[in-house]
Length: 99
Picture 1 (tube, helix red, strand yellow):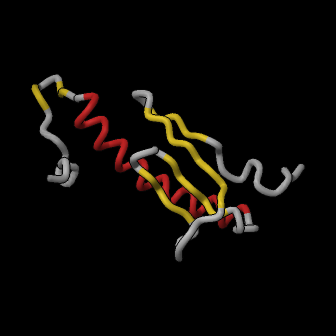
Picture 2: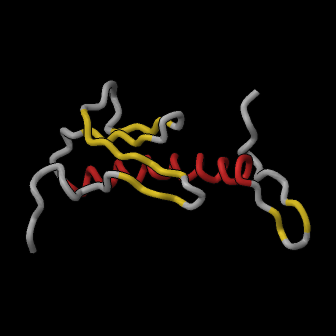
């Protein structure tokens, strides 16, 4: 099995979800006590580039993708709009806009 050079291939550079919701993924030094973070305003996941094990970087990426996925669900429910064949669908519980 051919190994890619460090920092390449262990996490994708971007993820495209339906309805043109693009998530950018960066390998950068992350400030603070976290190995990664999710910025919903820029739709960017940052994974700490000091993680030397591919499996660790992928784990952090997938954890942050969970946050991105939840924001995508909110985006679809509030911006794209969904409707059941049986009639309108209420916004999913817990995804309301903050006041």
